[in-house]
Length: 240
Image (tube, rainbow, N blue to C red; front, side, top):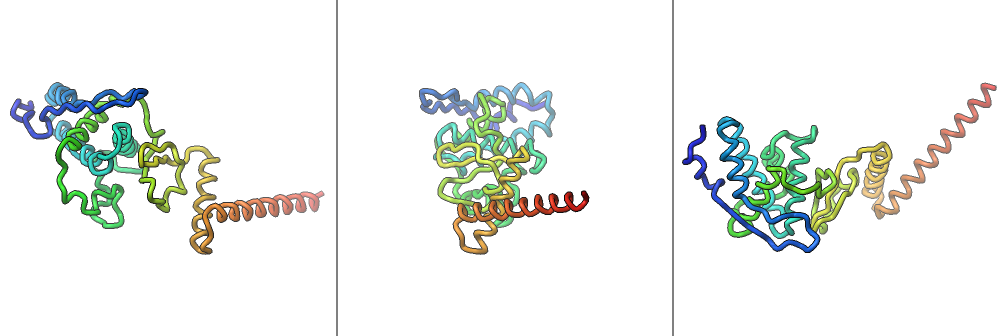
């Protein structure tokens, strides 16, 4: 059983932060106290290992929100946290928060979240922004986001960069400076993603603007389909 002394760890200290809400926002003010209360009730039943995992999840999610989105709106911070939990739920990523957040962090060019490998963590989190990040993380882990904010997104980037990987995904929403994406789901979405990827490779080889490259690739694909159709027609006539 977890003692009262254990609940006095720094991560469980009461933090209450109530940011100004937009008039039409459904997102309520956030508070870490609710998370502390939840953990106080759950820890004896969860067991030491599960409680420690919950503590680690909260710490890693708080760090990700702080370093990736502390200058964003509350909705933007929740969006970043939602992406991390969407990855935890995905078969393509690790199945716990810390493993998702720090995936590839030992490689300078391989980290999934830039703050884990670009030196940002040399400056420790602090102040009101850190308090809010911890509060937002607590509410996300409790499932208190009122609705999905990012459309099942598993990726995002800031609006001042254009990473190579976004052409293979489906854009879902923009919140603040972050553009969110999910994996394609339908056959049409996968086909469109493959066209964009082929166009990106074409543009890279020929120094062609991507929009022109997409058109060129689509023209080539159409021409190929026409040739295949004509060949099938010729063969069917020959059989007759």
